Every structure is written in C-alpha cells, then in structure tokens.
Length: 126
Picture (cartoon, rainbow, N blue to C red):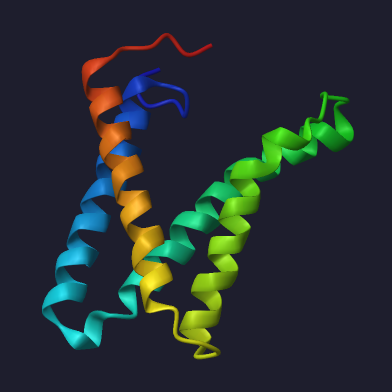
C-alpha cells in the first residue's frame, strides 16, 4: 500500500510537513510580533502528536501484556512536559519565551534529521 501508516512515503510526508510548518511558523514569529503565540501553539501540537502516538503503546502495555520499561517513557514524559510548558504559556500563566524557542529549535532540528533520513534511506517497515 502506497500510503499506509508504516510506509516510507507516509513517513516522508509527515517529516516534510513538520519541517515546513516549523520553518513557516519560525519565519512568521520572527517577522511579526503578533505571531509570537504560534511558537508555543506549534510546540503544543507537536507534543500532543507524540503523546497520541504513545497512547497506542500504553494500551499495549496495559491490555496486551507487552513488556513495559521505564526508560521507554522518556520521550512521552518530555512531550508531556512540553505540553504543560506550551499550554501554560498559551493560557497566560507564565511567559516562557526562551524555553518555548529552545523546544521549538530542538523540534526543528529533529525534523531536519527526519527529513534527511527518510529522503536518503529506504526502510522496509514490518
């Protein structure tokens, strides 16, 4: 199947879309003061997508008897922390501009790596 969730094509679409969104939001936020809330909003969306991905694994841990390792939870814990940071910033509870830009930059670097990986390497997924 050309665009199954586990195909290289689907991974490339996700990677390129994520990178494009990050570049667009970064440019908008730097050029316009009114667009500064886009950075924590995109951080929140990205972190929510990571948590949504991990929900299926948590379901497997609980109901399918898959072995659970605490070290596997570092990425979803990071995503939950980013969600709290971005949500608090968007709600106006605190101003964490530097932290949001740091997270945004990290996500952008990860998307650049993902784009390079899926563009130059072909994988047989399951």
